[in-house]
Image (cartoon, rainbow, N blue to C red):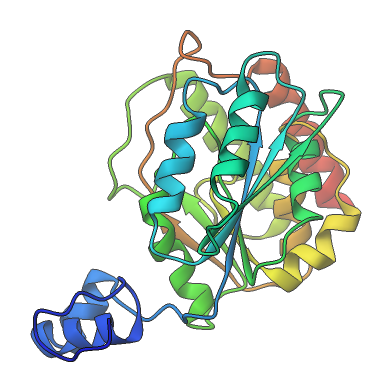
Length: 277
């Protein structure tokens, strides 16, 4: 709609929408509330690794599609053994005519791990900005606009969504997981000279040229991806920001997959990629 009347409803974060908010609230309030303009021509690539997520997959995709940003959803099934592949084919067919939310699906014939699925997804992206999204509903897609803002405003090249900055809600779960995460993040910071609070976060956002540069070098197929990609972006001197995000963690009974072996793998990767590229 193009009418300029007060009752006109515009797409959130569009130029007309922002002008309405600015006229009503003022510039200062808009900045404090995180209101800004997302260019209409921008396309966000959402890379989603999938492994046995039939219980949450459709709900997650619906939440991603509801975010008012033009995007492509790149879903990589890592050889699921449940109904995930069937659901993915249905979702891809349903979106065939939806240019605002393109869905592209890729399948691994052999399980490669989260890092392997992400490498496949990164190699397929066509958007301007790339974000990683898990398929388990632990992270909330409604927070995309906040995560993208430092990049769109040309203040950052990479953004980490931190669960531990303190001003967003998160489910209270495992103390030893929390302690292990803080230890790994601190050790990673020692090698990268960054001051991150959550290196292991799912939400990592990249300018497209960052993904194009680092993807050919990625080697970690499982959860070692997190320290590897952190070390690689730090070594190249990209501008890195951290934004607080909410977190609704799962228990192991609910399908959580990361385990103690992944912690030791991450420890090795921190040292390995902290020393050399």
